[in-house]
Each structure stands twice: as C-alpha cells, then as structure tokens.
Image (cartoon, rainbow, N blue to C red; front, side, top):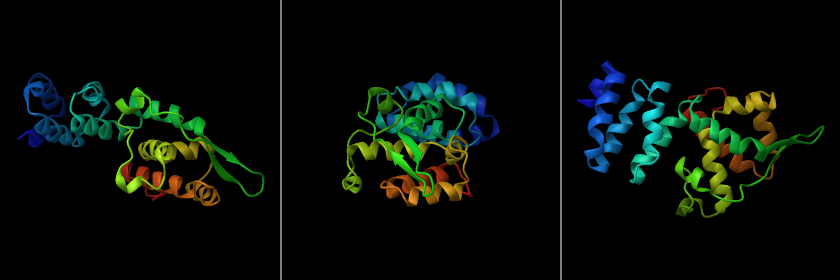
Length: 185
C-alpha cells in the first residue's frame, strides 16, 4: 500500500510516513524507506537526512543509499568534499591517479553511511582503503570527469596505471551502477 501511495503521491506518502513511521518496528521502517526510490527527489532530502540519525543501522543505511542517488544532496556534497582532495592526477606523459587514503573514519563519515569495520570480503584491502572505496562508490563518476576535465575512458586509463587501480575501478564501477552512468560502466 505504501509503495502504491509513494508512486501516486510521493510528497503525501513522505508526510504520512514522517507522522507515523517513528512507531514502526525498525525492519519495517527500513523496508518502507526503500520505496522512496519511487519518485525520489530533493524534496525527500530533509526526511532522509533525519533517517541518517535513526538508532537502527538498516534504516541509516537505506537513507544513505537513497541520498547518494541524489547528486545534489547534502550527503553527496559532503562525500565529494571529503574525497576530492584525496585523488590527484600525476605525471606528464604517462598520467595516473595518485591516492591519499583517509586518516580516520570520523563520526560524520559513519553518519553518512561509511562502515568503519572491514567486512570479511574486504579484508585484503585494509581499513583505510575500505573507507575510500565506500565513499568513491557514492560519488557520481561524472563528478570526476568534470573535476579532472577528462573523459570516462581517460580516467579509466589513468586508474589502470595507478598503484590503487583495483580500488579506483571497483569504486567507480559501483558508482556508475548506482547512478546509472552508462559511459563509465
């Protein structure tokens, strides 16, 4: 019923959930939040930002994933501000991307959905690389194309020559999938 309401009247569904959702069990709150993908817009941002402060992890994760799909959202802006200084194009003839790993996983990063603890599948990359990988996956690859003034193919070429090749390419592939960016994918 909520999905149908969300498709028909996104603002009305958001308002109704804001009024009644706090009393719902956490798994239901997360499931209902997932339906915000239908008709997702910047009008949902304030509600989703509040979801980043929910006491339940699954609700926070869903809110962060939805906000990341909005390139103009505050969460997306915070991610690009964190990561942009960490990547630099270096070299004259054989350019590559130099990576500086984040020094900490701050409380603000964790609020924005970055997991501090390494999951078993990421153990080979190290904790700091894991944080950067998660942040890269949330930033539209078009941001990097504009930031470095390069095409998607050129960025991939630079990443191929980087010591951090796998981290960059995996992060960008995840981002291209999230943001449905065919050129980078």
